[in-house]
Amino acid sequence: MLAKKGLAVSPSPTLVIDSKAKELKSRGVDVISFGAGEPDFDTPAHIREAAIAAINEGHTRYTPASGTRELKEAICRKLERENGLHYTPADIVVSNGAKHSLSNAFAAILNPGDEVMVPVPYWVSYPELVKLSDGIPVAVETREKNAFKVTIPDLKKAWSTRTKALVLNSPGNPTGQIYTREELEVLGYYCLEHDIFIITDEIYERLVYDGIPYTSVASLGQDLKELTVLINGVSKSYAMTGWRIGYAAASPEIARVMGAIQSHATSNPNSIAQMAALAALDGPQECLAEMLLAFAERRKYMYQRIQGMPFLRALQPQGAFYVFVNIAEALGKTHGGKVVADSDDFAARLLEEKKVAVVPGTGFGSPHGMRLSYASSMENIEKGLDRLELFLKELQ
Ligand code: PMP
Ligand code: GLU
Image: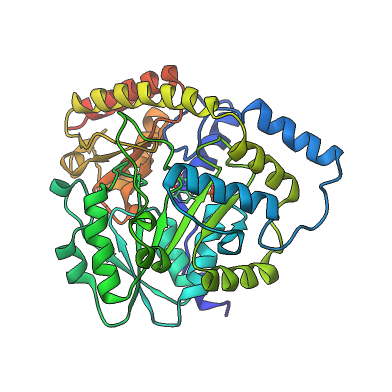
C-alpha cells in the first residue's frame, strides 16, 4: 500500500488541462486553449541576457539554500518600493516557484489536524498543499454578491478552535477580484483577534487593471505583518513561469523554519534563474506595462463577449488573467442528444466537440463554474469564443 497522503492528492487540474491542450496541438489538432495559467509572452530580453551572463560568469554552483543575499536584497527593495513593506534578507526565503513557497509555508506552520480556511473559489493547489502538510483545508463559502470575496460572517461560519491560518489571494485565481484596503483591514483585525496566520498569495499583484489600487495585507501594521506570510514571485509579472523562482517574506522565525525545510528538500533554487530574477526585479519595468496593456484589451473583449452569450454569467475581473464564468444555467441541458451533467462534463465535451480547452470549476471548489484564461492572442481568443458561443447555442 502506498502512502495514504500521496494517494489522496490528485494532479493539478490546471496543469492537466494545459498539458492536454499542448499535446493535442503538437499532434496538429486545431485546439484553442483557455487553460493557460501563464503569460503567452516571452521572458523579456534583458532577463534572458542576465541568465546567459550568469552561466558564462560561473554562477553555476550551489547558493545558500534559501537564496542568494543579492536576490534577497532585491526582493526587500521591491517590497519596500512597491508595497511599502520593510523586510530584511533574514525574512526572505527564495524557492522553486511560488507554489514551492506556499508548500514551505504550510510545512512551517501546520501541525497535524490544524485547519486552514480557504475561501471558495480557490486556486486548485491550496487544499492539496495543506493536506500534504497534514493540515485540514476548510473551504469557506463566499457569495457572488460580494464578488466572491470572503467576509467576516463567512469566516465565522468556518472558524474553529483548530483554525491556524487563512489563505488570501488577491488578485484572485480564478476570479481576478482584488481586496480593498478597507476589506483587508477588517479581515486582518479578525485574524489578529483569533491569532490566525495569514498566507497572502500576491503572485498576480502587478497584473491589475483600471488603476485599481493594490494593498498588501502585511502593510497594514506591524502586528499584522508578523502574522503574515507573504508569497510572491516572478512567474506571472515577468513571464517567467518556467524559470521557477518564487519567494516568501515572513517573520524571521517562520523564514528560518521554511529555509531549514527547503535546505533538505531541494537545496537552493536554480542559481541561474536566481540571477535572472534579480535582473527582473532590479531592471527596467517597461516590459510589464506592455504585457499589461495587451491583457487589458483581451480582458475587456472576453468579458464583453461572455456577457452576450446564452446561459453564462461572469464578474468583470480586476486583475490576473482569468474570467471565472458561472455555467449553472447550461448544466442539465443536452448537446448532441446527451445531457451535459456537470462542469467537468461541460469542459470535456467542449474540448471533444469544439476543440476548446477550459478549466472546469470543480478543482476550484466551485462545481458550477469554468475558468477561461485570456493569456492568449486576440486571434485565438476570438476564435475560441466563437466556438464556445456555437456550443452554447447548440444546447437544448
Ligand atoms: N498562486 C497562484 C494563485 C497561482 O495561480 C500560481 C500559478 N501557478 C501560483 C501561486 C504558483 O506560481 P509559480 O509558477 O511561481 O509556482
Ligand atoms: N497557476 C496556474 C493556473 O492556475 C498554473 C498552473 C498551476 O500551477 O497549477 O493555471
